[in-house]
Image (cartoon, rainbow, N blue to C red; front, side, top):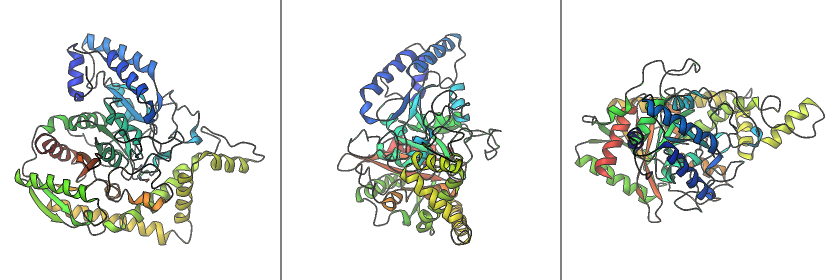
Amino acid sequence: MKNNQSCLNIVSAFKNKEASPTESVKNYLAEIDAQRELNAFNFVFSEAALHSAEAVERKIEKGTAGKLAGLVVAIKDVLSIEGKPLTCSSKILENFIPLYTATAVQKLIDEDAIIIGKTNCDEFAMGSSNENSAFGSVLNPVDHTRAPGGSSGGSAVAVAASLCDFSIGTDTGGSIRQPAAFCGVYGLKPTYSLVSRFGLTAFASSFDSIGPFGKYIDDVALALEVLAGHDPKDSTSFMSQPADYVNDLSARGEKLVIGIPDEYFSSGLQPEIKTEIEDVVSRLANAGYEIRCIKLPHTDYAIAAYYILTTAEASSNLARYDGVRFGYRGQDSRTVADMYKNTRSEGFGTEVKRRIMLGTYVLSSGYYDAYYKKAQKVRRLIKQDFEKAFGEVDIIITPTSPTTAFKLGEKTTDPLEMYLSDIFTISTNLAGIPGLNIPIGSDNQGLPIGMQLLASHFCESKLLQLGKFIEKNIL
Ligand code: GLN
């Protein structure tokens, strides 16, 4: 069976015995091996995946298999799976094996998905190009000299290069949507708190979201349906029953009103991205959608607020890696203090160290009010911008990234340049709202162009419905 089928079709082919999960796992393992050069995986679980495939086949035989029966899934290496390595692509977690499984991963397993491996990413999910990884860069499958985006680069590539049926990433400031845009696949960052973060290695706890990458809109809807829902192990997780995302897909959102914010179409935007999005928007207008210009006036302050708040949270979250409890321990230390210092100096990469220092600085006495407190106020203003906008429109359309995939090495010497590549995705995380990347075309070099749809808190169904309409009727 070819793997250009939607996940729903693959599951029904397995249930009708037109294809088998074992064959599918074997095909993907061969493909992962053939495309090793992409460096999308930190770990591949060949034997365990084949073993799971057999178990799923027995369940299919008995008629007890779950919603994701036999689907092959790749997991970003920041999520815990009991007994399997968890590195966050960092030397500091070398040889660390967790004792429990993240709720998000457990939910996939409970529905009979097969976990094929853990994907490469930027160290502790800090980056936009997947170049900050102790496992080396991931290559963009469309052009191997270019970045796949980050931080969930390996998960985006695993889907784009057909190394799995769907994959899981995390998004703190754009790490699902931007790599999805660079690689030409769908990527959904759910509303903050819709998916449990239990077992996710924390980067910035008030921003981190877990979400899926897929080749089709139906695939991300199906994955979200399984991932979403309250978890008593995550005190921030949303209490209510999540929506029925797959069934909701077939309902065309009646008279959805679409907003276009000026602030996202400024001069820094690659002209072909602008043209492609304008084309989609005018087709939506022709199809009867109302299009309105809206304002998100505090957009300019988003990057500064994000890098103050997330580094502050990261400096606190990453304090636990001290050589005592997890993974790597610094060499040749004579005192305990020396051991902490050596562990952290040798174990963390440059970008992670930069962020720990920045975060410690903005939280330090005398600077807290000037930076951290002020950034929290800006966060509130950005959230209010969206609340006001969603009083007038159902969906906001923006570019996902200001450019298509840039060259590997192009931005590594200038952190600020790298930070600016997330300019269109970061506000979403400050506000906690959901965002979806849709691949809408390519530029004159054949590189994928992504368009971002944003909706109000817990309105994922609207995002998916409009996404489906665009996938089916516009592209
Ligand atoms: N690129 C952004 C950063 O470096 C976003 C990362 C993310 O979403 N995990 O922080």
